[in-house]
Image (cartoon, rainbow, N blue to C red; front, side, top):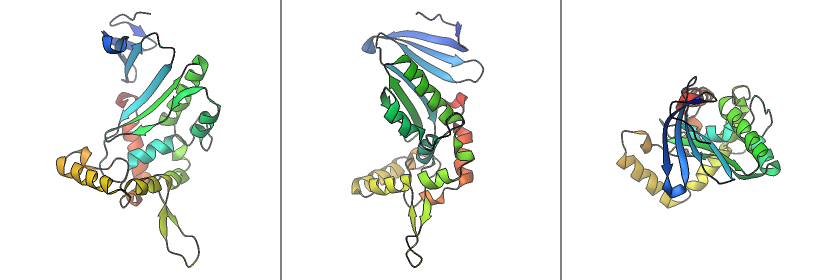
Length: 225
């Protein structure tokens, strides 16, 4: 199917069209008229269907809010109020790829499947997860995926725990990670690249529920996708 410039398909207006030889694909840049969301559509003969919704998420500190939000978005949503729908999809879906990734300035939620019905189901779960996550109602999500206080016994030592907190402690167990972090701070002292989007262990416990929710409200919108 060839899409025409300036034509509207399912609410998306075609802005540009160009054939890309390197990947044997017809590329279309489209814009959703109602929301302002931008869409890059690559049409080709590959039967492996791929979709990703991505957001510009520049960090303003080292709390790792973008990384924690990536984890937390996949912990239940309005249509799928499960504890971990992502885990259930991994077990029951026909997907060929299923993940989410945090970069220094963006967050991506890609899915892929060769089965058309499964593909549309994956899209539905991920879109509901990013736009209608359950962590607004379940404040334990941040404590689970981000950080919380941990006390093993009444006379034990108070410590921090959490999925992302422990993950980033593992990352920064390597001297190379410290060196890379210091290099980024020196090279980019006045923009978002000086911050650790994954979360710096000492800074992660500074993240509050209010800042967590505000980051989602600011960046997880169709016009920013």
